[in-house]
Amino acid sequence: MILAGKNILLLGATGVFGTALTNEFINRGANVYAVASNSSKAGAIQSAVALRLFADLEDQQSIKNLTDYANQSLDIDAVVVASGVVGFGTAVNTTSVDASRLMQINHLGPAQVVAALLPKLLQKPESFVASITGIVAEKTFAGMTAYCASKSAHSAWLQAIRQENKTKGLKVFEFRPGHTETGLAGRAIFGTAPNFPAGLDPQVAAAKMAAAIDADQEVLDSASF
Image 1 (tube, rainbow, N blue to C red):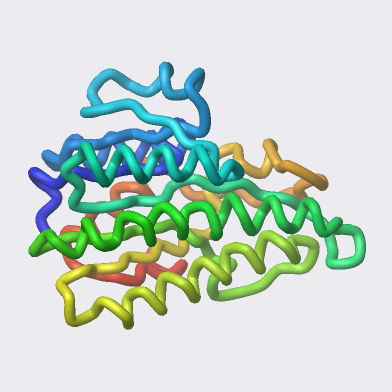
Image 2: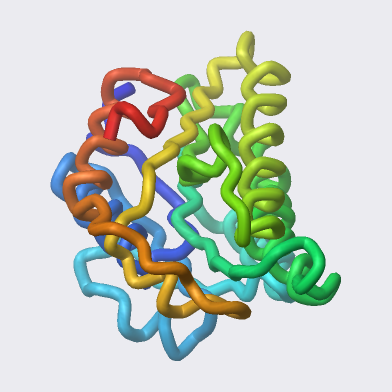
């Protein structure tokens, strides 16, 4: 898979991972349609991107607005999901509202975007979907019950769409890095993060993800980081 010349819709473009991946893709010759969670954040996206967009993954109409526009007005070869939030708590002390927010932002919202754009992607001879799930797709952790569930759900969904489209030319990439110094744990939407050890360098991790796409390595497990 050659990234040069690809038009990539990237969710979560203002996050640390999103910014690092944007840089990697641009450096490899791709065009990035950068998606932020709201219009204010979209304005802060670096000028090197091809287009700034926004979509609130908790808002069905906002998601539809993005996918309708992309289907009607953009030439897209790929969708990359770098968006996501975290929350901390056991099953007993995590509310259904908090668990639902994690599931919506980490899985259901991105899945809705990808599903709406799949017919368009399948018209291209070499298209792909890529998403960051993390080490929690391989190993569960106490005190992160809802987060593990949301990322594991997304991992299973990625595997399923890979099977559904394996004869249609679509590549589906999944990246499972361990704890990375993105600052996400300090911005948890609920609960308090434990004391994590020093994590991965996000720019190094992003470079490995981009290299995996170039090499057609569809699953980059935690040990590969």
